[in-house]
Amino acid sequence: MTSIKLPAALSGTRILGIGSYQPETIVTNHDLAKVMETSDEWIRDRVGIVSRRFAGKDEKLTDMAVEAGAKAIADSGLTPGDVDAVIVATCTMPSPIPNAAAQVAERIGVTAAPAFDVNAACAGFCYALATASDMVRSGSSRNVLVIGAEKLTDWVDPTDRSTAIIFADAAGAVVVGPGDEPSIGPVAWGSAGELADTIAIADRNSSIHQEGQAVFRWATTQIAPVAIRAVELAGVELSDVDVFVPHQANLRIVEAIAKRLRSKGAREDMVIARDIVESGNTSSASIPMALDHMRAAGEISSGDVVLLMGFGAGLSYAGQVVRCP
Image (cartoon, rainbow, N blue to C red; front, top):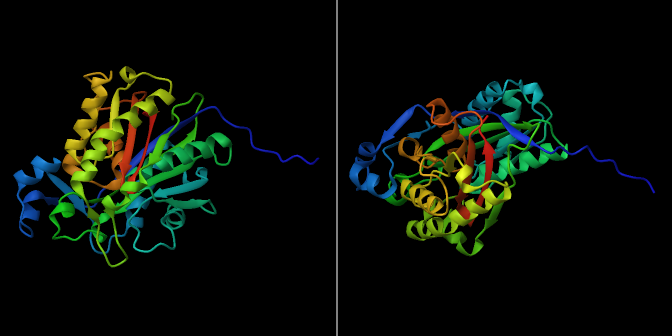
């Protein structure tokens, strides 16, 4: 019988580089109070956000993805020619086709590479990271560029206080490649489709609708156990985690999940990402961008054990343990 040959599998993958991009325009809570019934105090109390960035009318999602992706490749020490696959996690492209990834790959200089989008909303980056890691481990790719990019302002009603105060625009990226030892752990993921209507866009002429209280209850009760499962799958203890980087949905959600993890054994000195305060909720971009900002600020260091946890519309969720490059 003729045998089909498979590439040699690798035992380990790692993040080689990180990059991010934010638009120039900073929108404060005071700015929003000029166009809707809200205040700086009201927004800080409910979601913890002080400011966020909005892309200009002519600035595309793919423009932001290109900027973040190019920075991640440069940070990895590779060239675009060394990258052989591109994945873009996004839920806010203006149209379903063409996909973002093929356009981004061509503009960065990653030619003739497999390029596809992943839509798991705010969990998208972790989904894409897991996919990239498996692609490298299986031998189907050598180095994969993973980008989370969102232009949420295209899909938000600017007068809707329940969403306009939260969502923002940005992109974050990493390069995944082979490692001498595993530095990206197995993914713990899943979905709660029975709650799909709690975050939704009804049709192409609609804006994002979110049932904030329902999402808050779900995230603060159901996500910590998934994060703990990701730690278990990686073969480490909660006390080994140096840094926790959850999706930057809402500061109250972030702090509630961190509190539950500490009650189960995480250290009191575990560093918690709070990029939400200055960046807002940027969906699939929030985790890689928070990583990039924390590293630049000296809050995390190379070799740190980092727990990533994405969650959002779908409702979808995914988390994994990684080492900081």
